[in-house]
Amino acid sequence: MRVEMVRAILTAGLCISAGSFLAAAVTADDILARAKKLHFSSLVVDTHDDTTQRFLNADFDIGVRNASGSVDLPRMQEGGLGAIFFSIWIPSKVTGPEAVTRAHVQIDAVREQVRKHPNDLVLATTAAEIREARKKGKIAALMGVEGGHMINSDLDVLRKFASLGVRYMTLTHSGNDEWADSSTDKAVHNGLTDFGKDVIREMNRLGVIVDISHVSDKTFYDALEVGKAPLIASHSSCRAICDAPRNMTDQMMKDLAAKGGVIQINYHVGFLSQEFRDAEKANPELNKTISAEVTKRCGDNEACQLIEGDRITREYVAQGKLPRVEWTKIIEHIDHAVKVVGADHVGLGSDFDGANMPYGMEDATKLPRITEALLQKGYSEGDIKKILGENTLRVMAEVERVSRELSSPTRK
Ligand SMILES: [Zn+2]
Image (cartoon, rainbow, N blue to C red; front, top):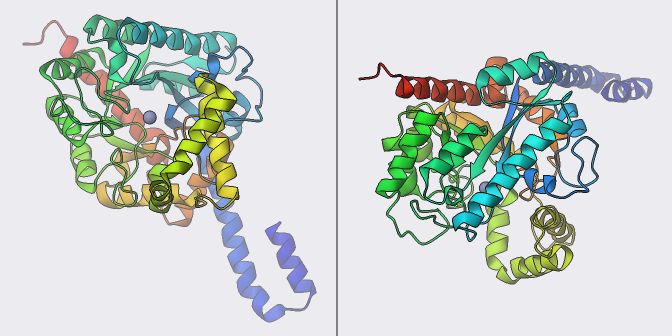
């Protein structure tokens, strides 16, 4: 395409400017080719996807290209996604034994998808298994529990989740649970309770990564202090750019990084763009109208709610009622985080199928754009590989090592 444009200009006789234009075009083509090669030779890991909700609908097939949503096998393959953490999520208000039961249903739903697609998907629980999956040309499926309320204040439930393959747990969702404060609720525990600290210790022993997305700042610092292994923020962005309480401040990112952790940047427009957030705040009726429309279309089907919420938000953007946010905002957040903590502590946690995606990052097929944009910014290939997935793999391996150490019978 670009080469054709250059040819057309040359034919038109615009020889003087054509030289520099040609050079620019060649450079852009060169970056595109390099990006493609780099992206598809990297292990791209996405630490947060809500596609699990769709698994509960009998009519959803991950094996075919879907017209709605962001994730299925063909689109993951086209976007070069090598490993994906499917989120086990239920709303914070669902608690007690029902929360445990519903979490188990979702864990089984993820495992069932793997059973149904043995040629393309494989359940992975370690960094080595992710690399092994890649060697076999398969996508590694992993699980993270999004919200500590699902263990019903019972460490046995946590152990059961771990034995079924869960490899991270977000300490809270948008509401507090019985032992930790959320960033979007009124603090009642002053961070983690004593039991909450025991949960962190047990997670370390089991090799389940502590995920501090969604939690209050005080919960984050308590978890950081108690934790013996690096933490992740599986889907959080930078508060310096977008002042959402569940985004991380520069200082929090530095403290997370000092203990080897990684912040995986979330693509949700309300966490990326201050302008979008301000527009939502300025017109609270808009959110109510969107929620009412979502309920009308979906009832209490959560998968439908997540997908339709994104679709209706897009309709509002098209009508000029909400600002349009471009995918390049993701790059701004990655770049900011890298400037603050370095390329060793930043990763990707899309929130696909659970949030409002920016224009140009509608689904997993668009992921190679991130690689291209970072190359264009002058990032080294090594740093880009780290951001795409190697940092997350490093944290996993370290969490596994700490788990082995804590479980060792020779430990004093
Ligand atoms: Zn979330």
